[in-house]
Image 1 (cartoon, rainbow, N blue to C red):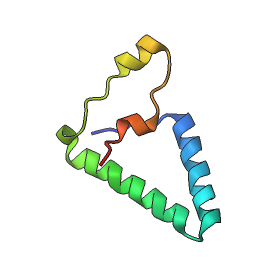
Image 2 (image 1 turned 60 degrees about the horizontal axis):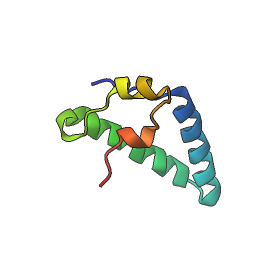
Image 3 (image 1 turned 180 degrees about the vertical axis):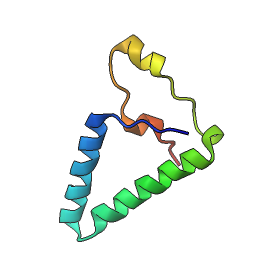
Amino acid sequence: MRILVLSCAEDEFAEAVDYYNKQRLGLGFEFAAEVQRTFERIRRYPEAWMVFSCRASEMHHQPIPLRCAIPSS
C-alpha cells in the first residue's frame, strides 16, 4: 500500500518534530518514529482503516489533512 503525504503535511510534520525537540531533547524524534510506526501499521493492515477517498477532496477543492487519514485510537 502506498501512503501519500501532501507537501504541506510534510512541512507541518517537520515543524512539529522541531517543536517537540525544543520541548525535550529527542521528543520530536520519538514523535517521528511513532508516525512511522503508524504508517507501517496502515501498510500491514490496510483493511483495518477507513477508506480514504481522493474524490471527496476534489469535490471540496480542499486537501484533506493528514490527521483524517490516520485512524484514531
